[in-house]
Length: 307
Image 1 (cartoon, rainbow, N blue to C red):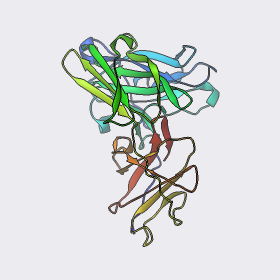
Image 2: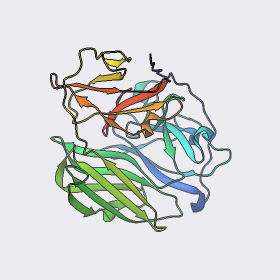
Image 3: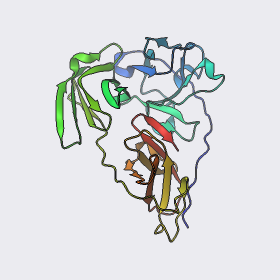
């Protein structure tokens, strides 16, 4: 009989250092989208987890902070993740003492209180946020993080019902703020949330980075009677498969990511869950897993749902 292990995470704090030159530093902006209550703070290894020294600024739409962080530090702030990786969270004073994982960042550390992860040694897209009206995106706001010794030369945007049916192609370079490193792109025509979206950025070194989401095909199928909420362990009825079941409404699709303990499920290949035909909010999937301990999470591109 196969078993799953859900991991309880702990906290470990490290000392941080700040940037000195463009060759060993990265400037980035971090956003948070709660209502405008009290001042929000960005906390992490880079400021010794001090919950009061890095306040964020409210723009009228979101909270933002722009900072420069050093890369290739010695010793590495998170040696278990490799070079130039920092961990962080948000501190909203209205929550009391609760520090919050970044809902716009799919990667967190399950072995350290689900701290959000920044990997600053590479060109990458960061914190996708789509402004929604009637289940359609009207605007895309997303960070594009790169070394300060490099520069962005062009950004291309495309979208379609699926990845093979692209109907929109735009040059979005002019919408990139080179100080905050944020692309803020108003769509000329709203697109359904379920559409395939692709962003490609190029830098002056000829490197490129792709961000893609959506365009998934959801299979609609009657959910087995043996499927319990959460996880149902293998049985004869399930064909020796683990059954995952989640109830969430208002989603066009739900992705399931699974990884062996010690590997981040956020980076695992997503599995599109099946939608139950007999109820509006039930999603399920049977998966055969090798014996061992696993971690998993559910999400769509609005953020993590459960797990």
